[in-house]
Image (cartoon, rainbow, N blue to C red; front, side):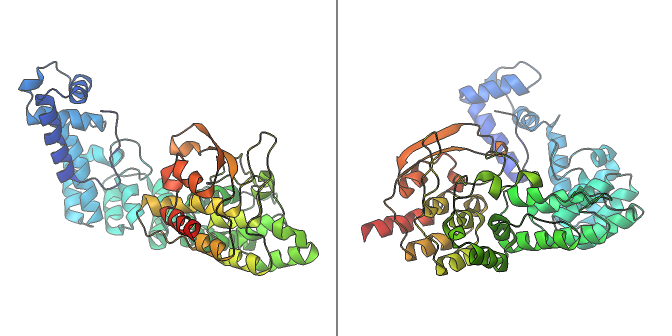
Length: 420
């Protein structure tokens, strides 16, 4: 059993079932269960003599808890915070004051100590209680409340801190989650997007490179930055990022070739905005050397895609073939494997593939072939560089190694189109 992390909201009943399953596996001599027993139990013992308490201890230590009792405390405290049960939180923390200064989920977690955990959920009575009992993680809690868009909670924590200027890095969390309300309240409370020398401090690169895909929120955050002093490159790619069809229209009026131009990675992710390389700028199908229609697919920009097609953009425009022979894929590839597909798949939300449907209605070729190379962002814990040679859009989806990036609905649409 590897070292494990508790989920954001652990289920004690499920953990009890896991412990019983582990005990049964020990008794029948399952090799993995025996390895777990040796690794996580402090005392040598015969597997056949293991009791439920032993299995519970092994399971707890695999979650980096020193004991089953500590694991249960974590579950009980988190459950009480979710239920906004003030008295249950008071009883747990009063009896176990060390909990105030340990991660709610035991192991290091973005959700933080109990007060910060409560801030994620906007549990303001519990925040006030935990602070009165000695919790000190107010600034981290403010950051968490902001990125979750808990504006009332942000203001409460700001007052508890003595109403100081909000650190500029609070904007990083709201940029990652594309949270407009959190961005707005951080700016209201003093976060700066440019320093006293006029240099940009706003995390524009995070907005462009985040794994979130919320087009309207992205546009609004970039507009808020601009209202507070940020200036952007005047390029077609930045116009698309900003959702500014008026600026795209001006670019195309000056140069109609923009509709089908192939843009380099550095144009899509400008280094002058502190953007990163092709691996660290989070996206699905490779974007280097692609058109605005490819970008629309990865960024879920349906309205802009419709507008571009209405003005004559080529739905079958091929990406640049790079010197190593990879590239040449059309926009339909970017609908099959896309960052926009990740969170709906991860959260098991309905997959409607509207941009796939749009491109198919406009004559996307589903038999075209291309060769692609892809390495996922390090945050996905898959560092392989994978190559796919001479694949169709459907084969690209069938073979791609990151399954959460693949739209099953888009593949079904393409299969249907191939049968016509």
